[in-house]
Length: 124
Image 1: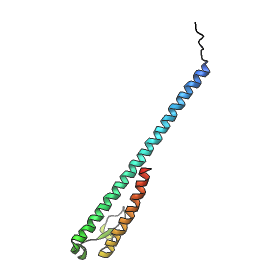
Image 2: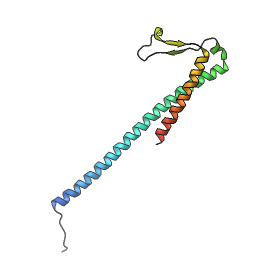
Image 3: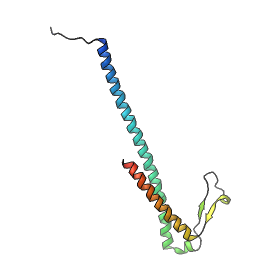
Image 4: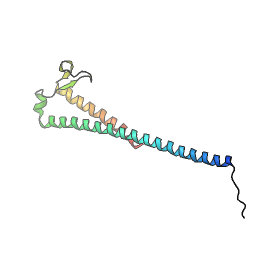
């Protein structure tokens, strides 16, 4: 007969504790990775919205170049309001073509800066 060493209950308990702590550690790492992935997906969604807005603004600028009479005849109006109030009488309305074009250029620059920041966060 071989001398088989029987482990004491304390030794078995320690091994079981190590297994549990390893499992807990893996679960914790997995949860952190899931949270990171969710944050990245949120950033990707925000990025898509910025790109969509930029595309709309660029389409408006292209239309202004192709059909300048639309801008010159005050057919373009920039309206600002709050989320809580959509009544037309509470809008701030700007119809000056030069101001609208400058506003679009300014917003495009801000969107480009924000896109670069978002893309950096997504990649990291």
